[in-house]
Image (tube, rainbow, N blue to C red; front, side):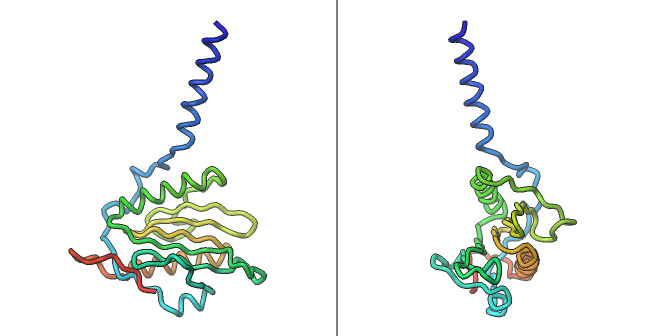
Length: 179
């Protein structure tokens, strides 16, 4: 009898652990799944200058990584801006779910509303000590920003605007970020 209870408790723990590890954050109901595919998203030098963005290694045609300071004392540039264009809005959203599951082991992001932050189709954030880790999708683009609260919110709004004004992806065209 005791052995059976131990086995059942272990099975229950395994099931609970498995469910805790994989969370889809309600992604089946997220807006933006049928939005237009965007391409040729241009991040101008003026954006990099305004937000002190430094291009990092690993940037390629359809993704870009910038480092940025989180405050005036941050010489290590621990802030980040990551942008990736995907072949569809659904694919971008599924990678957002993967990212959220990755960071959930450390922090619990909160789904944002347009009243909180007016960026992207769907957005999540975790705030800590005057910094914010903000991740969102807009059309077929995934954006992840970590930095000082006010700067991240301002940058997220600007990037959302850039994506909205970008070209629509044409057939047989390669995905491209311009930086």
